Amino acid sequence: MNLFDQDGNLDLDVQDALSELGNVGVGMASITIGRILGVRVELEAPNVIPKEEVSEQTLLDYIGQKNIGIWMKFASPLNGSVLCILKQGFVYDVVEKMTGSRYEGKDLYADEIALSAVSEFANMLSAAYMKAVGRYTGMRIFVSPYLLVAGGERICIGEVPEECVSQVHKAILVETRFQLLEEDGEKTRAAGKVVMLPDDNTVELLMEALGM
Image (cartoon, rainbow, N blue to C red; front, side, top):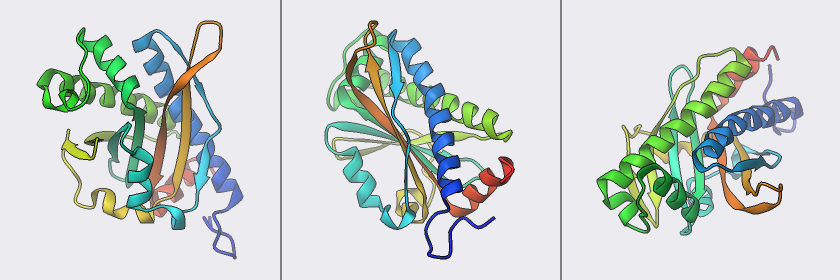
């Protein structure tokens, strides 16, 4: 199928399908988060951004100084990345829940125990996200965390692919935000967002799997 219409814009049906995949993936990841922290998580509607608007700087700006970014790489035959952008305080809470100790600032990645907890959490998020997307498409999909971005620092937590974030301009961005909820259903605070960055070929494979 054609991913783009005659004007070069992403096909609306493809946009809808990518949005749904983003929602499905983050939905399962949010369940994992909720189980760790003992809270409910609410998703916002996914947003598909044309690839012309995506750049490495765009995503670094998304991460900012008050968030923590976890880059994950699609495994073959798919190509591209998934980026989890999480509020610093949220990650501190998760690591404290997992380790029993509070790590903030540089201690989060300077301390071996804290960094191991962050890496484990990233693996849980990626496994949940891709398990849901894989079930939805009928494909076996795997991603692996490889880079942590925090406070301007880039810390390897896996094998960094050669293209890394320099190739994100080739991607189609699917963004899904989520909020933590109190037991009464009131929103408490934004926890972060997940950005799926498949390249054109990967989007074609996903659409074929969905019968489009």
